[in-house]
Image (cartoon, rainbow, N blue to C red; front, side):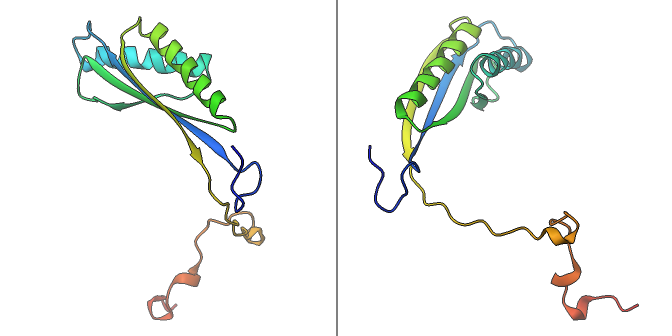
Length: 141
């Protein structure tokens, strides 16, 4: 896909999004479910380098919904990375994945300039100053 004329070459990127629904049938408590979810999340992070989070069914002790997002300059690569995540989740959860939703969307945005940080203040550009306080509110010493 060629970039649009208003966006410089190379500014197009793809965002891959996946939501996986797991059934944890042997779970008798939220603690049991969270142990399974934690193992799955850790395994995906170790093997694929992608962070997965629990995004739904938080209070259901036998169901978990996991979500992740990836970015790439190539749509095919983004979908391949999501496929790797799905394979690792299926292996780590002993095949209890019951539903998968995946998509890769184009993200085209024009970058805006970033304002300069004033480093003259000793490197603490985020320190508050009294400049914002109106004169009437200042304590007289």
